[in-house]
Image 1 (cartoon, rainbow, N blue to C red):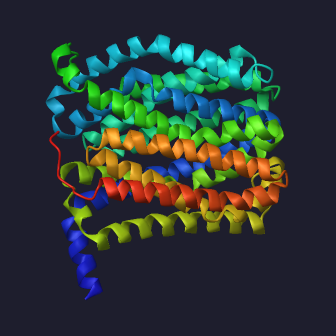
Image 2 (tube, rainbow, N blue to C red; image 1 turned 180 degrees about the vertical axis):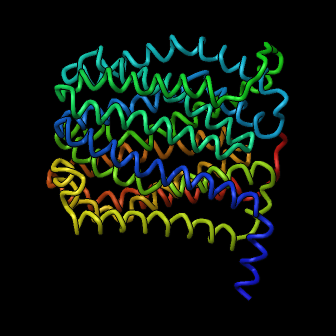
Length: 422
């Protein structure tokens, strides 16, 4: 009976399964390339400078969600359901990029002044921010539009190409450069800039730009709420690096960044699944009416996340120096965060459920509450003890609390599901 059900499920969702396998293929390639990139950077920069770079990059990721004030959301929706309007909404997105640039520049300057003044030169910080906010984000948007137009293979190839460019830059940096963070900033900016250029020239759909302000104003609330939600999501996702740097210093931030980077590498298959699921829910959210489906989806996300972490931890237990000497310092701590990947990915899954079902304002409010709670929990954990082993273990409990909060608030918001018009 179970085999028959699985066959029926596979037959009914053949297109989605093929899309997922295509994306996983890209994720597998990206995983290998990302691993080489991580090894090169984590073992060329000192642990302290790696912590500073990871924290600055996290700030850039957060600020990148302000680009075009969230107009990427209407762009993605149009790419998914009304492709003929893609040129109109691409023009709107470009207009949003210009308008948001001064706001992002001011926010970046304030971020440096508050967090990095005595630890990183403003010029180095600016290189990393431009690379993340403008270059990498533009590449991501080309991928998002590709996925929206069902060109999953093309989007996956672009991700692999962009990641490969960063890896080549990291390897060249390790071989040729002086190993300083200031020099790495130039390599990082060049690699991300080239990725953005390739994305625009070879992967973004050929469209005729048309300026239609009347259409953009209709999407304004959705765009701004999504931008706010995305910003808040990445604040609650990346805030830990900023807090660890502020409370524990660059060395502790470097060890923490290595651990969380290894956790991120195990999450790539889950993120491919979430992308496909979001598109399915944007067309019909009826599958969430079943409690069994909800539990099944959560179970799959948790199981795959935990299996990935255990696999990585087991590999590093057998070959502790396989990823380099700096990584070997943090590798024994990886098994201590065994539950963190599952809880992190489930929180991201909840966020995608809210986005796919059109609950963008509620999503923003939930993410704001999660960000505040995460700040409180991490400040408490880091203030409780300076023993790395103890506070790393306590991260499991902190993320459990965040998961429970996310689940309760998300499923309450989804209690009455009705498909909202695109």
